[in-house]
Length: 508
Ligand code: AHR
Image (cartoon, rainbow, N blue to C red):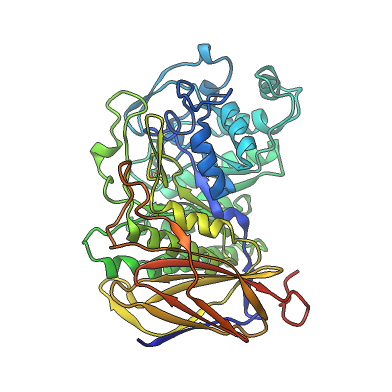
């Protein structure tokens, strides 16, 4: 077996890791809200109707920025329908997933939930069927001290204190022909600029995410982003990008190499941002909000998003296996490796709909992808280091050459966190780690996610097939660690390090 070397140097720092890259996404679709986080009929419901059992599992994932209420749903949503006494809220036809929306969960419930969960709320305004004025009214409702029409409405609905929502999305996937109110780039740019101005005039402290390309396969890919950024200019703080991947051809090796394409998508979007900045002679650097990402292919078809005029239907309930868990870790590695560019990222989604958690009646199932999320959530503070891998690899069918080992690393104040994915289906790996400028004292903690095959998965009947286990195949002697990995696994290791100035890089 050929050795893999993971080369790290305390001085080769990318940027501090923005905790908001560990964000999530809660949309009104299928059973994400109703029967997911909110289910007053459940025996697990708390006094607000939130499912305690689900929230306890979600809490462990430590999500930061939580995007709401959509997604495609946002482009037909009128926030005013979801506030005020529940008995007076309208039941409406919902066209994104051809469902019924009872509006029993809205802004006030979401903010309550976000507070309970320590999430940073990130609201997406309706720029599909909504108006720039409706968008700014929502900012007023959420952020202005009482004394005006919509802030007084919030106070009447129970909260004198403003909600202080700092992150706002200017619509969702407006480049997609499937989007309600989809328009060409120049028309979206006008809508977004108008909304942005009104919203920032209402509360200058907010940050805005402008819609970038929703899919790399769309004919307008990047041309859309260029048009929008050049027009919206400095009203934009972040550009959104989305990515769903899957093993559509049943080729695990190729699927696991998709990380190359994720890296490339980030780098191309960043290049476009820099181009737009230069073209408009702006001093402002635009960063990326990767505000929808996940594995999604088994249930990506028209029937899976058709609620047939009902609500809380079983829509897009993807069942995840071991190889999907490796890909989820690959996304996170890519975000960490691009910590200087990606400042926000939202796993789509958090419960039932393409999610790490599934509910069935009163039961909760943790899917395979839950575990890498858990392992990374515990190790996210610090500065991303350049992680150079030398060792065996393979030429993939669609994504070029990849090393068997995919990696990222975060240098914290008293710990070095290293993440390793072994993509090989047949080859265990030996990884040598001898980081320069970092004195490793001991292994603080380490876990592994592995399994009997790429297709192994958890079910309600066999819920513990895939889970994180303590990992101990690490030999630390002197300044060198030798790590032995089985095939197809994700490993996260935290080393205690000497936190003196000599061994610690220039992290402020
Ligand atoms: O997350 C599911 C859907 O995927 C979202 O509503 C949409 O934005 C994307 O196409």
